[in-house]
Amino acid sequence: MKRPPSLPDLNALTEAQKDELIVGLWKALVAIEGSDEATWSAGAASDQTPQNSAPPPSTGELRERIRRAAPSRRAQARADVPARLGRRFEFLGSKALRVALIVIGLGFLADFGVSWNQQRILAARDKTALELKNAAFAGLYVELLRIAYEPDGKSYRATLNMQNANPDAPLYVMLNPVRVFEQTGMTWQETPSQAPSGPGGSVVKLDGAREYSVVFQADVKDWAELIPGYMHVRIQSDMLISQSSEPKDDIVERNNRFYVYLKPQGSDDAEIKRRSKFSGAPPIFIPMPPH
Image 1 (cartoon, rainbow, N blue to C red):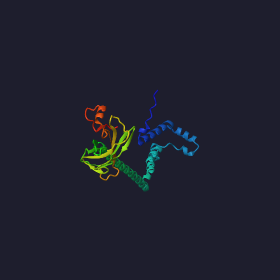
Image 2: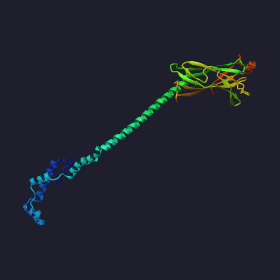
Image 3: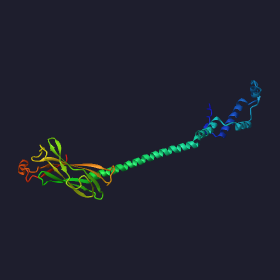
């Protein structure tokens, strides 16, 4: 038994091939059902309407009907897709819409520009602040050089030094009055002090090194004796630093504290030497690390 022939792939056929297929199927149908005149006559007689008694169309007439036939729904659907897409995007041609889109775009662009400019200003300000902080703390050295007795027999003169490590980049330093504190018990008590001369309380252009001093008294009663025969003293030098001669907000505050053991004037060096076991003469002051 032979298998029936397989149907062709309609999607792979051209329009002309589809027309040929329709004509072929019509011919086959005529050959099967209308091979003799009697079959067509019987079929015509069974119909109730006189129009159905017409003979079947010829091959040429069938081709003409196919040619004049309207396109298929599928072809019409394919043709309607671009038309619908065109109508869908017709609003893009509106002048008002184009103006609105331009205005919105300019708004976003302006907002981006303002944000970028603010970030650039903040970055530049942070960089300047960091450079000033490095110059004020890493590039500026402050040290306590010496402490000496004053001729009045009750006062002391402390001499400090500040030095700019980068002379090509001057620093403008405003020195606040140097303050001196003496420990009594567990607290610190401030003692009278004053700047004898020099830049105390003024702005100094520092492009190298400069010394400044303070004269103070240490007459606090019941001072703490951490080392036999010596007072515990703190010398505090606070300053404001800028890289500009007329600063605005580009200022850094730096606090310098120096702790020393200070020998009172009129002390018995022999007694201090005996108690502290110094090999030589007891010094006027003994510096301590910051604490």
